[in-house]
Length: 186
Image 1 (cartoon, rainbow, N blue to C red):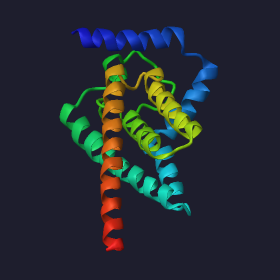
Image 2 (image 1 turned 135 degrees about the horizontal axis):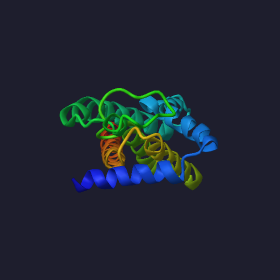
Image 3 (image 1 turned 30 degrees about the vertical axis):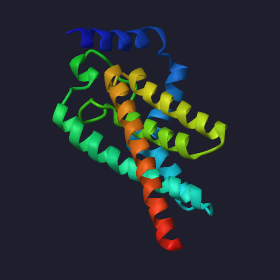
Image 4 (image 1 turned 180 degrees about the horizontal axis):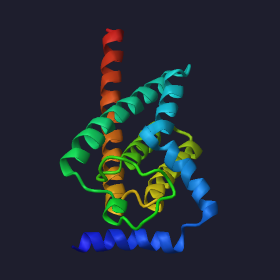
């Protein structure tokens, strides 16, 4: 099937041309930081405890996105599609990290990371913060390919789903916020 040729072609290219011990260290930091949405949970909590109402609202939107990611990506789609991970399909591959459990499609790391970057991208005015969020999301997603634990199509699907969930949470959060403000003014 052509999709598997594409997916394994990309993974094999990365493994043969990019993987190296010094980069393993950097990629482990990003892949473990993205585990369970850890870095995005931390960012969300920091925002929720901020003095700024705008940051608190953004933190709540991000927390909502993370809950939706858990439900739609990790619980619903992964189990519905049940795609085996690439290293399961190629048991000769030796991983540089502990093999993750569960199914491959879509990538939860990519979903939570791009969802977090989408929320930050829509809500935070500072360009450097937005750029850092998108860069972190991209490196976290790439780390999943680097370690041969997700297919490129898993990462792409996770990124698209994450962006959609992030945009939805910003849209819904702004609608709710406006509604609350109108209620309080009246």
